[in-house]
Image (tube, rainbow, N blue to C red; front, side, top):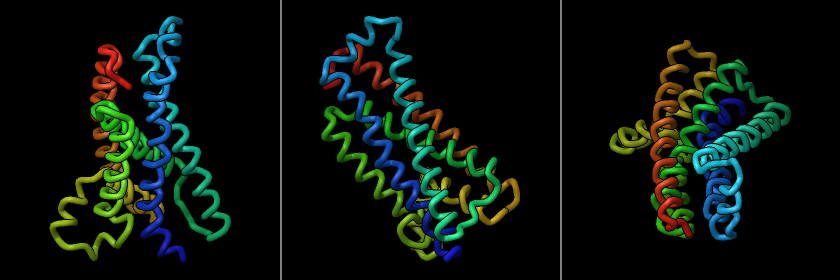
Length: 203
């Protein structure tokens, strides 16, 4: 049972986090549709602070959901998740990547419906290519070549390295990739969402 969870559960968990984060990130549209954003911006809160708060909330809620999943599997299925420090580091980096990707999608998509649809496709595709649905080692070469560049794959590598007590390098390399991807996409996503708000086109 432990081997099955070590191999499959990390990738599936990252896919679930995309859909949890999707609802949270979509809140930027809700604020605009309900006309609550202009009232917020009438307070000392500025647009950058509003967007950062949405991103931080997304990361925190995903962390809470992952914590509950890990606690449940540890108690019920006796899954050993490994060193807590490195485990937290990996999932924080993974959540930043997820949030950044969602910020890009919701910043670029013209409508909430389109953004929701793109998120579903991206979530399923990255989970599939990253080894969250089928064993990564059994995938064709081309799929593995593409999947090795997905944040889902880096997340799985980091989590499995922690769970199996692998050398530090096998943990830090995926974490660095996730953090770089997360910071870049978060920055781009905030830029595009800010432009849409300022142009009054977010609806």
